[in-house]
Length: 150
Image (tube, rainbow, N blue to C red; front, top):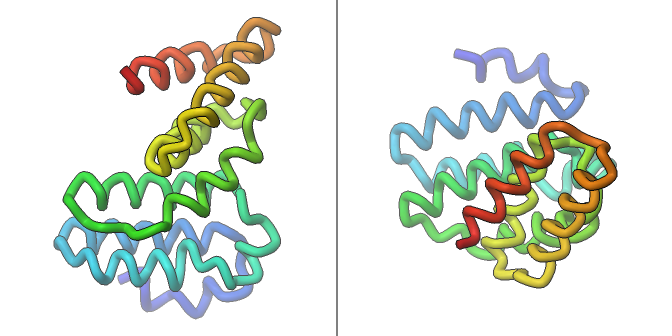
């Protein structure tokens, strides 16, 4: 099992957070939700870890965190205030549309935290990005995000 290799992950980059996220998926599938939350807090979204402190809004870490919280809530798990930290980061990324795959994850954080004004500002940022002709995938993401809010 991959956890046996975890000693090799130490000193690595943010990919180790993603590997722990995969471990969390294993526990999620087994409906071991307390263990998933423990892995979230301790391993793949540990706010005290040097990697997270250095790059608190690293795209893959945000994707890992938001997608896991979304899955947990869909199963009726109380994730506490974890969305708020991600929503704070999302507000700082309004207008940044360069990582198209991360945009829906930012939107998940904002909507889960109930930050509707920020949701509208993020959507407007996407529309501005599209109007400027700066991206090809953003129109799809913006349309999907708008539709999901209805």
